[in-house]
Length: 283
Length: 178
Image (cartoon, rainbow over all chains, first blue to last red; front, side):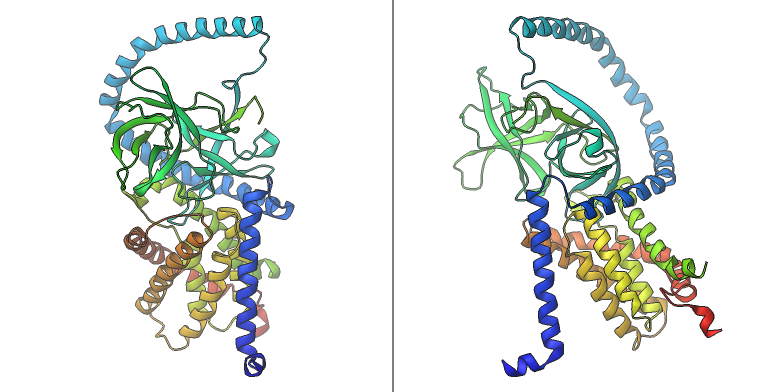
């Protein structure tokens, strides 16, 4: 022990390792528990985010040019597909408008102000993505000043892609739904089974960044193609946000419970503009 | 203007840090191969090349520490990945540079080795704190695209970092030597 204490290099290395582990532990703890990061951290993030917006302009121009060239090659095929969709769209829109009006009238008749399906939206642009291979984190250009709060659901391309994990004044971090973070909040979801009953569970990530519908409380099997929506039961996201569709139903590795694989509906791989969903009913 | 010359390297690293995030976002579809992701490591490559080009300036270790803290806070929200790896690799590269031939191929090998160590270190720490749960098999295969992309980035930025490290050393007034 005396030799160890007299060896300055060894002692310094030991102290540095302790400090690094302490800082790591404290920062992980702060990230999980605090609703907003420390002021200095928030300020630093916003400064870099401003720089990212400036750098993004030329980078996005080049990237959009490449994507446009790629899109032109698929134009004819896409056009045919969209023509089919447009014929249905008019009918769906008018039906949606009449149902919305009816819903409003019924809510006012029942004196209901907000329900689990009520939410407001904030649109934001993605300015950065974590450069390492492992974590699925995005940075967007809107923060607490735009009304964004921690744990809000985030959508892109028609489906949920993740949730907000850190909110600064003018930027926020989003953790994708495909994250393998063990401490991440999971979406509570529901789907309509073949017999008409609602099946509840949560979304988890299985091997290969695939999504699965687990902790299913009902043994009714879900058919391939069944749509899975948020149930609004988790307290953070509203009811009725599309998560994805059932791709297959198998048994887990122990053969004891069903493993329902899900194809995500949202644009997880290439999100550029996202919508943050603010639930109106709190808690 | 003299102060600006002394801080140009720090500004270049900040731009590289922002580019890391932008490239990861816009080129993501080209950096993902099934379940295997490639990392975009412009900043670590920059720090390693700066240390290999200029092995006498000890202030670069502090620059690496500062860059590491900003990168950790901005990208991950936790401190302990880049803020530990960057100063350590900067110090190690400065030591290695004294024995290494001053040629591109030798420096490229050191940079690629550093990239592999960073990938394994970040996987280890992020797994330890529970932020990721990725198998060692997936991690090892992901090293291949990461090394290939790092090779491309090193070739593209080698001259830039070399010029900056030689002509604009961090916090050193070159006029004092003229």
